[in-house]
Length: 125
Image (cartoon, rainbow, N blue to C red):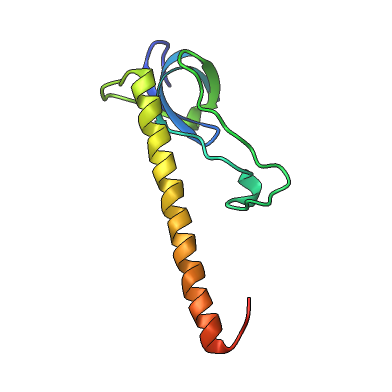
């Protein structure tokens, strides 16, 4: 069981955070956000990577000192150094931008290969 004041790593709405336990019960824990480890994903979670989804969500990272409820299974003790919130937010945001940019470049490479193959096959796009 997690205890009040304990520092944890917690998953919340596709993001990952470092926070302090404010309260806990037998199935969930209230975490006060201290740092961002992974920025939340954008878009519709039920239609992953679909830019044409009916509802494309913009997800903000939880704010510094914001308190969020997470399932107990989604919070584990954290023993590392807690970076300043603003620095951690910038690093998590940049990592997410790089991840998405890499996927974009991968998709562009795939399309270029498929265009070449389409020409080879005698097909038009």
